[in-house]
Amino acid sequence: MDATSFATAYALSTSIGLRPFMTLALASLAMHLGYLHVAPAFAYLGADGATWLLAGLAVLEFAGDKIPALDHVLHVLHFGIKPVAAAILVGGALGAVGASPDATTYAAMGLAALNALGVHSGVTALRGASSAMTLGIGNPVVSVVEDVIAIATTLLAILAPFVGAALALAIAIGALVVLRVLYRELRKRRAVRA
Image 1 (cartoon, helix red, strand yellow):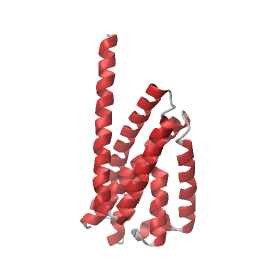
Image 2: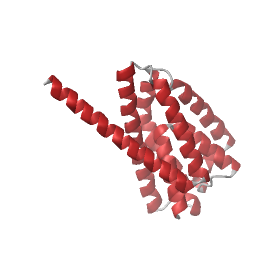
Image 3: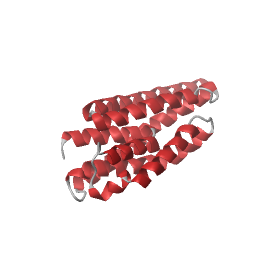
């Protein structure tokens, strides 16, 4: 496996941490058009039916994430969806050089799942803070920003993997910073109440 494949995989798993179905739909389209090559075991992701299904799910995800309260329901569902989606997509992207996944691919799939879950945790914390501060009114704006970042990260992962990985790293660091700030704010509020 080469560094380009790992950069692509990392960027895709980070993007899935933001928008799983949008990332999968764009990756499926890229596979269908020949821009993203995957292992034969994962070729179904680029099939016509998969591309259309994922595009439909991406539209539902896009619309649902703009509706306060429904966005929180989606975030709960995504705790299970995002790690699995990241593992599958990364397994396909890294397995492209071999016919069957090896131990390194399986390890990368596990790390991809954890990465997507970590990014999702940061996004969920940010969304919770947005809901608390704006009573949900600011959530659609946060959602649009997440959409733009997810699209950019996915496209860069496919077209310029190292730039995509750099953006993914910035997103991961940003998620950690958000979690840390929210944690400190929560501790500060608890100290005031005590």
